[in-house]
Picture 1: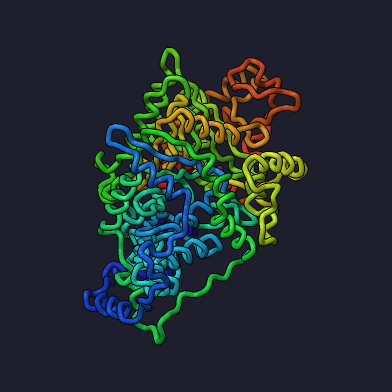
Picture 2: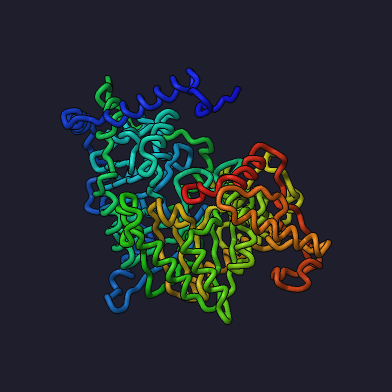
Length: 634
């Protein structure tokens, strides 16, 4: 007897479950708040919020900041014909977090924050508390977060609603007008409103006084700043001061005013929580899991010598910088070209490459337009070199997306000319940044030996030496800290660099709204290129290359069958693939897969190195076989 509800007559349990889910969908769709309920909650918040300021100075007690001062100077020197920008690449996680804290404390007038994820771990609490304190000294603070993965607790949002009259919070595209999405709501959202539910705001931005902003890949969660004990991201931001900040302000205003940006009192569960309060919720003192590490970070964020070494000295003075963002209308009408501003601009930049495209993305799943561009580039008389840094199955936390990348390996190598490097889960390079972000975190004062980037270079060598013993192949499910790639960047011809939130995949092209900056400067492009190339060094990444032909005729037959299977529209069952992962042999120098001596210097390590036979690997195989139809939304 089949368990399928579509075999013969639907069984009673399936019929009951489906009817219950449909009833829940209809109920949830109709449960919007009345204007009277919203006005009542607004009145309660207005009457119970403490309006007392912690500062009465004209500058709202802003702390001096060399970062904000440099941005103000760049704005003062800029003209429409000759813009001036200060640009700082934020690769290391500790400076990226310290820069945020420093700018929040330096804000005199406004702070605008836009993000996809906001967790309540140490990083999430730290930044949120800094914003609350800024609002309480008189700064106008606005937070816009995508609802699905941010502020999951109505209690926290109730506290934020009462924290300060200068703090405004909105959630973007809330499911069924609620802040919290339990499993039933999640399923109902997919069932009834799949398109709207699937469209998310993926932008990341922190903007201070409309003068300086930080944008890139990082969300507000421990793992984006190397504060997670088990799994952390290799990520990247860029800090921009100058006229491009005005573009950031205009983009934020469009999202803030959009109909999908919903105030807290308009959310059903938060509204109910506010109206049911018996006492005014006080803003709580943060409870950090690692308080001394937080204290060390806060000390660095106000230490002039540390700030100069890590954030001022590496800053570049450049001319042309552009901030691009998809319009919020992209989520309403994803087929409208005007809404795809950022996506289209990235495509044009890649299309114009002459010598080299260096692409770093966590999800190597190309949209149709991207495939066309790379195919045309590769067919040229003198095609540019295309170097790709991405995740392995052992390093990614999105195994279903990886399955789609795995499916099309042959196409990427032969039709597009990609040179693919996949991050190792225990790569020593990211491990060094983790150690630097957590070095002596049990002490209040950071040691002098790592108080500058120059000294940190020596620390890197020391730490790499100590980490080699633990950098041996390990299955995905074994204990131990892992690293996954989350950075999204492009360098084109060493003339320009892009850092943003765009993953260069169908979801980023058609569903999510994305943002980022493009810096037209050789020195910046060189900086960005160097950081990406570090991530693909042999100790940090495997190389994807064609299998060596052992029995020529059988190999040709296998590859022919594999090609047919890969291009089937519904399934891909052939288990023997054209390409596999390779590790550099000791004593050899890195080389391209087109080098005739490649197989002499590289050892094949399997399609999924460092991964045990586990449910995740089995599902990866299944998604490769049957998941082609879901490529656009994974």
